[in-house]
Length: 129
Image (cartoon, rainbow, N blue to C red; front, side, top):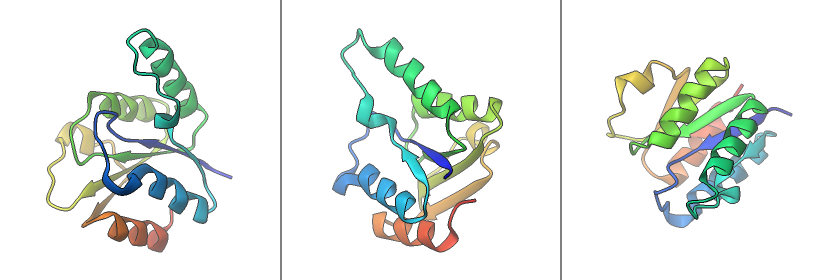
């Protein structure tokens, strides 16, 4: 079973349990989703450990699925790390949002969506290989 690392801005509060829905869709597609936000300790002292854990989880993943609708230094670092490790990189972004060309050049696939339900349908329709 392929592992999919889900990257999303930690500072972003996604409405309607966005990350839980992505995790559910990935499970329906028979992937093992890795959602590092579940393990984050944002207490200042645990940041180095959180970053090290993220990169370790990314090392163990086959695919990076990155939510890139809003700029994020952390997601950018995860994208570059995945690129350096030769991982498949898939971006998901809200329709109409602009993404840095520097980031776009690393994406193998970009999925634009209107809302969470639309993204769910698109992920289920195309699957991820």
